[in-house]
Image 1 (cartoon, rainbow, N blue to C red):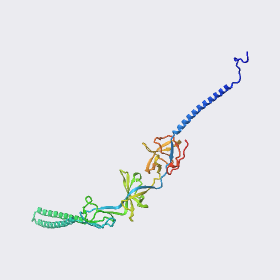
Image 2: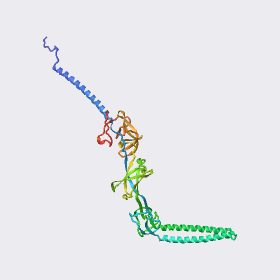
Image 3: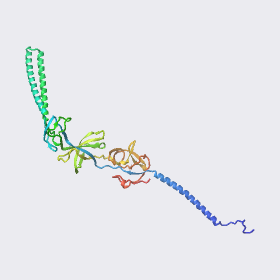
Length: 402
């Protein structure tokens, strides 16, 4: 048979086409394996990233101690040490006034005269009634003595003698009544002179010559107003968180808008020892010397209290507190970056910060702006805050690896 017959196969090296096919197959297998590996790796990385992103990222701060002295600023109402409206005690017309606003007066100084002709006539009538009562009493007393003498000789009955004695006693009572009425009218007569009740200054004059004067406060108008401004009282309403520290002896500085840059020392003299139930404030009285007359009653003052500080108390930013049914809590970072909730006892509220009396220590790391859903045992990632977000007086807390 011929050597080149198509029916005869010959063995030998593969053709180039077969070689290329084998290479393509290997490449395809490698690409498929790489694709599977890439998908598995991406899925694993995504799961890890998802798990990491589910861990809350928090910023922590440390509690710090407050300043050595607390400066509490509250509004104060300035009042005169003594302050009295002057009303008339007798009715009539104003005859003269002798003091106007701003006049310094002494105790007992004459402020005004009242013309009261009705009181004058009542006084004259009372004097006449007293004379009549005295004459009647003298006659009854003489008669009583005579009848007692007749009774001793049995010249009159005992009943008649007792009647004369009773008449003498009744006339004595009438005499006493007339005397009391005369003294009352003498007092009313003296009230025609309006006098200053204490040393001070006239701050108001609400009458003039010829004005109708009605006696008493309910029906009459105030004639004068007198105030003792040599010493002033300052009344302040202290909020409940500070009430326990506002005790007699605590010092304060007063500042007034009309005296910029100047401070007036004052001291708490007394407190109400009870909170006003609606506002929950304690009324406190301070006193300040005003011998130079620089300050005016009725003015507004800023009272800067120097309150003692509790050395065991700590301060926290207000945005670290959680309001829960269990009470006020803060979230601290425990071991392995896990959250631990702690109950705290709040003291005074300073607005941006609060005072904590119990529940935490100065070494605790407190979470800033904790989410409401935060619970015990939750793992968190801690990072340092940007410098502009760090609370005042706090050093940045370094982040910890998760």
